[in-house]
Image (tube, rainbow, N blue to C red):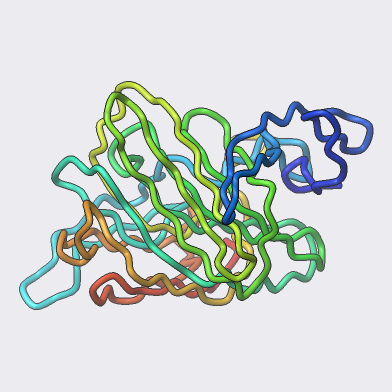
Length: 278
């Protein structure tokens, strides 16, 4: 079956049955114009059976370089993140929208994630939600998820297809409580959940394209060819992302090979373009 121990195969009494194994799938409240309950699958795995984290903290390769006068934002490289991260203050919210890109798959397994989150750039926790495009051979698979890292990611059991209009936000609600919300206006669903996490510093707000973790040895997984993903309406603390002069992040392999490009940030808009699986 492969990627994320999921395949939405069969849900029976709160458990998902996949290839003879039952994975407990707790129910969470979801809204799509009316009150509803949806089952989600926890502890997703890769094709090899390793735990898949389609989120998590940045793995810095080069720490931020200060932008020169008249130049673009400060820049940084990472082996798993690209996009923009705002730092330098306490953040209570982050939001963005994107069109789910189309995966181009040929052989093997590759993975790519698109998300918004608080923390993770210079801290050991991340509160985040987003979507994935993963490749299993020639088959592309699409889904939404949330994660309160270092806890395991949780898949949201709603349909996501390439070309769908996605919007997502993470908001600190006080008393160590976070609201994670993601909507697919093309499919007509909205999912929201509230989670507790104590001690998170809320020291960054980011909009990120990611090569997820992990291989059996804990390394970064190959980046799926997502083509190009464009983020719009990106905000932090209710203000346009660019107003925070966020750090521009480019994804490179451990050997320094560039895996995607990050465009200049214009207000709350930028794009990432795939270059290599690493």
